[in-house]
Image: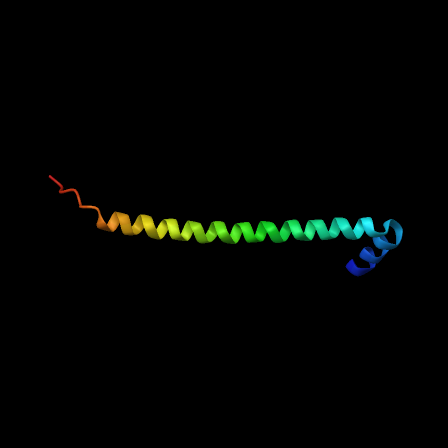
Length: 62
C-alpha cells in the first residue's frame, strides 16, 4: 500500500515528491543523530556529577 502511494505521488508530481520524501528522511536522520549525541552527553554529565559528589567532603551531622 505504501509503495503504491509513493509510485502514485511520483507519477503525478514527478521529482518534487521524491525531493520532499528525501528531505524528510534526512531531517529524521539528523534528529536521530542529535538525540544520540545528547543522550551520550547526558550520561557523561551524570557520571561526572556522581564522581564530583563522591569526592566532596561529607558534612558532619550534629
